[in-house]
Amino acid sequence: MTTRGKELQPGLLPRFTLWRALIYIVLIAFAVFYLMPVYVLIITGLKSFAEVNLYRMWDLPKGFYLDSFAKAWLGSQAEGFRGLSGNFFNSVKLTVPATILSAMLGSINGYVLAKWKFRGSNVIFPLLLFGMFIPYQSILIPLVVVLGKIPWFGGSLYGTIPGLILAHVVYGIPITTLIFRNYYAGIPTELVEASRIDGANIFSIYRHILFPLSMPGFVVVMIWQFTSIWNDFLFAVTVIGDPQVQPITVGLNNLAGSYIVQWNVQMAGALVAALPTLAVYIFLGRYFMRGMLAGSLKG
Amino acid sequence: MRRVTWERVTSVLLLTPSVLAIAVFVYGFIGFTGFTSLTKWNELLPDFTFVGLRNYQSIFANLRFQYDLRNTVLFTVLFLIGCLVIGLLLAFLLDQRIRAEGFFRGIFLFPMAISFIVTGVAWRWLLNPGSAEMGSSGINLLFDKVGLGFLKWGWFTDPTIWYITPESGAGQFLKEIGLGGLTTSSIGISLAMTSVVLAATWQMSGYTMAMYLAGLRAIPDELREAARVDGASEWQVLRHIMLPMLQPITLSAVIILGHTSLKIYDLVVAMTGTGPGFATDVPAYFMWDITFLGNRFAQGAAVAMVLLILVAVLIIPYLAYSIRTEAEV
Image (cartoon, rainbow over all chains, first blue to last red; front, side, top):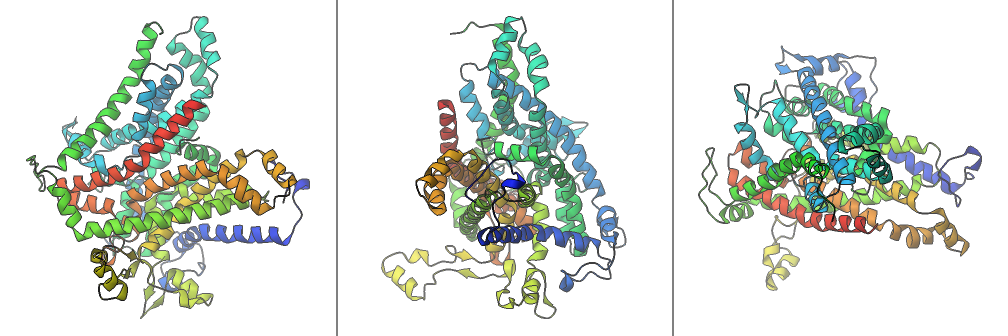
């Protein structure tokens, strides 16, 4: 255990000792702790309604029943509660455009702040960054007032998905700008200078040099924004009151807060709400990490 | 001084929409909230009559807000300790050339991908204590099964607040030295809050682990080797080489976790609500309730400004420090 390397080579693994056994035991214990809620979510979601019993919560299901998922998804007219399917698609309609718009804005801002610094740009940057740390409670009241004043198809943006998209795009500017600025700072400025000598301008440099190199940056930013917008509750519950329009986090909270909904249906609903971001995490975990570490400024 | 070219003008123009948006939606809105907090707008229709700091007086006099501040302090302290200790421990263990490191890392980190609402729903049922008539449920049931039944308790349903009562010896003493004001349930420890801390730590400790692991990997091997050659033990290497070098990471983690904990809202909504006797209530919850359910906009704005000031005290020095160290590199 005194040697160490970045790459693990089987032949170089340290000898198995009591100390190392202890390490694995602790790691496995923690893994069990982290997986415990997921275990309960899954086994409860898979139980039949006859089996569901709070006092037999840890028992494995006797078969493979999808009744709870069906009920969480479709709702039940007889029992009088709505399913999450509508909320799920509201979240899709919210998250996809907001994520794309955020990433585009962030890329442009990051490009300017990394490669076209002007006098005052290093004052503007921290002023932008402050926006990602504020408690959003301090802007909620004017946000509701202003969204209520922006006309939108005969009504106002308040209570609509586009209103919520606007909020997420604006408050996403700091983090997306930060990630892209740091990303572009890593691309040699000589590349930009050389193409300027060749006659390229601010737009063609972006289009032909920076943008083609931007894919990893876009992946990181889009994963970050997708996850935070999908998971957001505060903006959604404040801006949208109509249950037909609410995103899934609000829908799930209503479902879980209702006394007529069985708890296995709530658990199945929670799993449905978590699935898209979990899928992103499982398939693109490496980029997810990078976005997270960028959130701590040091990325 | 560089020449002004159309490109320099364009570069500024490209940034303008975002700068304007932040100027209005962040700074303008904060200004509006600050202004609202000084007015009489405590009913549905706006009334911008200036009343000075009266709204701040009424929220600080409000017992619920006092409890919220009490709960936030406890939450922040325990949550920070939990995440830092677990994060550092896991990072250190994962750095010991572990088989299936990626597998463990993936498991420790996945809660970060999940919404606080999902976490809240799951943990609400896990920590549901059950009832005397029907028996235990959730973790309490698990305790029963493995023979640790004595660990069972009410979790977030327990209304107990530990505080110094005026009648107790310590309370009498405080009264004598003129600190009788400390003997109140507004200054104490809400046991129910620890359940929320548990769920929040479950969600965020992997993040601290990832930060520390990145930090450990950035420490050159030569440094540790040199220390070992000089006869330092593993513990000394950790204590005198690694920990000091991880200090900037600890600072970042404290800032990130600290401002998260001051703003915590969704988790409490989904998991416990305000709890028995506001035992798990937090300022963000109070703000939303009085503003959007109670229509006391000016008081809600005052709570929001208090939250903002708390966060700003934490964030502004950190931002200044980050930007300065970055400029030096």
